[in-house]
Length: 318
Image 1 (tube, rainbow, N blue to C red):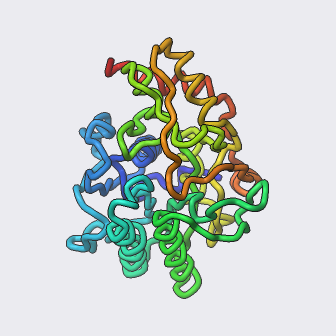
Image 2: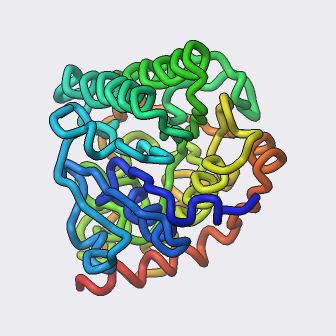
């Protein structure tokens, strides 16, 4: 599958100033796509796209996916949409209505404009949270969908809208379910993932807080692999109308992760335990067979080596 099909094509990346979106924008610019990054900066950072700001193939628009003003101009002539903007899981309990507005209504807005402007491909970032507490292992894309968090419910609503536009209007959609993505630029505040939070706390010498006993198993995926899946999904005929687990299969407990990060950073940080988070999932064992077989994805398996790469980025701040 040739990613050069995107060369000179106008593409939109929502959440383009965020952790994942910014990596995606960089790779799209490298293959000479004309990239419009839409981000309301609620979790994104201008520094994430600093390398692109003077590139003629890159344009940044400060905008929420819930704001439809000016959408026609942005979508006019667009070939593909990579929808990565989202209300994050760890803030959904604070404002579940905003969570619904961004993750469901926002997706619907983008789908409507994609249909109106005859966008060729719509790549939708979803989440493993739509499964809820897994009951079948390894979990394939056919696993029952029973989310146990506001975030999972709102992201599942977004998926259902995507399915409707595929089935009713023939929009060429692909749904990617993300799992515990890690890498450089990941937020280490409340919007971030456990890897980035632990890395920054270890470097700062502050406690690494584990919510629960730490025996929870997570399935981590290197951000560059996720970008490859997005790009291939946008050009592969096989991907149209499909759902893929975007997951490497690397399994590590939260406690082992904390211990190893303290070790590799030489930190004196304590590992402390807090109250278990509401809706937290204990165990992930997720199949990536479908995305590997159909899109030819070969995943990075050197978790600790790539973690060292991410660490080098965080060290710049200390």
